[in-house]
Amino acid sequence: MFGTTFIGARLLFANTSKTFGGFRVAIASFSCECLGLLFLWLATDPHFALIGAALSTYSVFLDLSLGLTGPLAGYVAGEFGYGSVFLFAALATAAGVALSVALYMRAGREVGGPATA
Image (cartoon, rainbow, N blue to C red; front, top):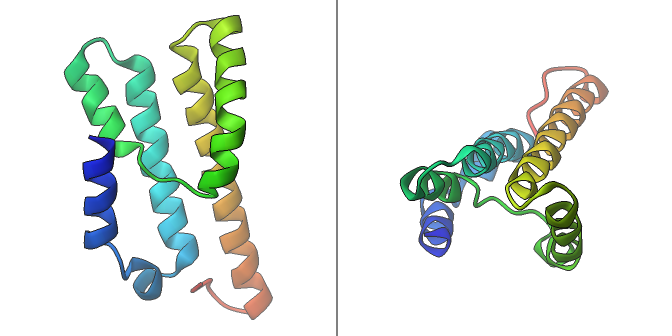
């Protein structure tokens, strides 16, 4: 599911950064991923989990995230239970949305108009 969604998104949305700007694409992508992770956290059946998996396919700095995610997710699962991994990931993604919005707004103020990047 992840691979199919990832490849489909790359093919369908290849030019969105050029069209809408990187900040807007990052904000929309992080928001979608956050929603998917919340679906995974709240999943009560496999169909709901598949929807969450399809939505949570956006990744930034993949190499860094792969190196940090395993140990951190293991710690969270050990301390708070397996399902909590998805909640913590959703919270981290929400922080990414907030950071993207803050940078988007700051870029708009520096240029002297609405942020278009």
